[in-house]
Amino acid sequence: MEEKRPIETPENESVLAPASTAYRLGCLVVVITPFLGFLAAGYGLWGWGFYWTELVLLVAMFIATGLGITIGYHRLFTHCSFETVRPVKIVLGVLGSMAVEGPILRWVATHRKHHQHADKPDDPHSPHKVGERSFGVLAGLWHAHMGWLFKPSSAGLGRYVKDLTNDKTVRRLSQLFGVWVALGLLVPAVLGGLITGTWRGVLLGFLWGGLARVFLVHHTTWSINSICHLWGTRPFNRNDHSRNNMIFGILGFGEGWHNNHHAFPASAKFGLRWWEVDPGYYVICVMKWLGLAWHVRVPARSSVSDERGQLRT
Image (cartoon, rainbow, N blue to C red):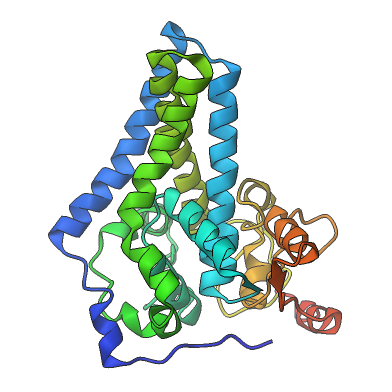
C-alpha cells in the first residue's frame, strides 16, 4: 500500500504563502486565547459551578472536532485512506476546521511534509532537531508541541497539496476557515443559552464548549507531534522516532498509535492490534456499513506481520 505523493507545480506555491509576522501573531492569538478561556472556565467553577449542560457541550464538541481532525483532516484529506460522498467530506472539513488547527490545505501540506522528512532536518515539527541532551529534549519537546507554529517554514508547502488544490470543495472549505472557527465557538454558546435559557448559559457554553474545548483538542493533537515522537513503544522498525502511546491512542481517537501510522501511513486503521482502541476507524467502519465510505484502505495481515518482524531493540 503506497502513499500517493503530489508533485510540485508553480501554481500551487501561491496557495500557501510563507508565514508572515501577521500570521505568527495570529498563531499566538490562537494558542493563547483558548488557554485563557480554559483558565476562565476553571475560575468560573467557584462562582457558577459546573453543570451537565457544560459537560455535555465540552465532551460533544471535543468528540466532534477531534473526529473531524483524525477522520477528516488526517485520514481523508491527508492520506486519502478512504473515499466518501461530498456532503460527508464537507461535514468532516467543517468539524476539523472547528478544531482551530489551521485551514485544511496548510494542515495537510505540513503533515505530508512531516511524513516525507520524519525526524529529519526538514521535518516541520520533530522534537529531535535540537539534540538529545536534557535541555535539548525540553527544547525539542517545545518545538514539536507548539514552537514550530511560529517559525516561517511554510514556503514551498504548496507542492504537497496539488491534488487538494484541484478539488474545488476542499479548496473552498479551506478558504472559509475563519467562518468555521467562528461557527465552532458560536454553536456551543447558542446551545448553552437555549438549553438553560440564561446569558450565563451562553457564556459557559462559549467557555467550555468553545475555548476550553479548543485548548484540549489543540494539546491532544500537538502531543502526537511531540510526545509520540519521544515516549512510547516501537513495534515497527521505522527510520524515525515515532512511538505508540496508549494514552493518546484513546484521547486522540486512535492518533496515538503513531508508530503504526508511520509504518502504514495510507491506512485508515491506526490501531492494528485488537486492544489498540481506534475510535476514528470505528466511525469509518460505520460509515462504510451505511454506504458513506468505500475503498477503505487497511494493510494486509501479511504486511503487518512482515513489518513487525523487524523489531527495534
